[in-house]
Length: 113
Image 1 (cartoon, helix red, strand yellow):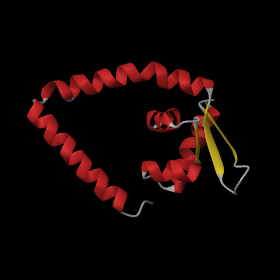
Image 2: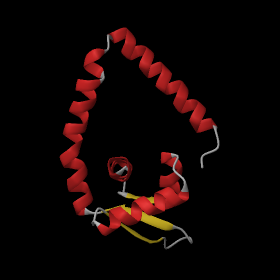
Image 3: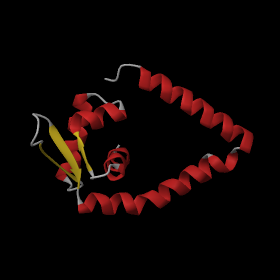
Image 4: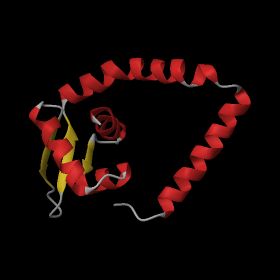
């Protein structure tokens, strides 16, 4: 869960995302997101603050959070390669990508939590 949250924040242009948008993009309930962010904030991986332009909360990755995501990303990528990609043929990977795209399109067309 930490990895997913940190990755979303690190990949945003500013390293900051509205909490509601983060929950929607991850298809998490507001409650799950709130509890996860509280735990991560307690460990210094991110901060939460009121948005200056709305009544929403902004979530921002901290220096510590960036260090964590940068440290674990190579191991995560190697694990995906070792446990999934190395076992698939080119044809199977093409099918996997097509399936993932159809699922993404279906989920994006649905109603998030």
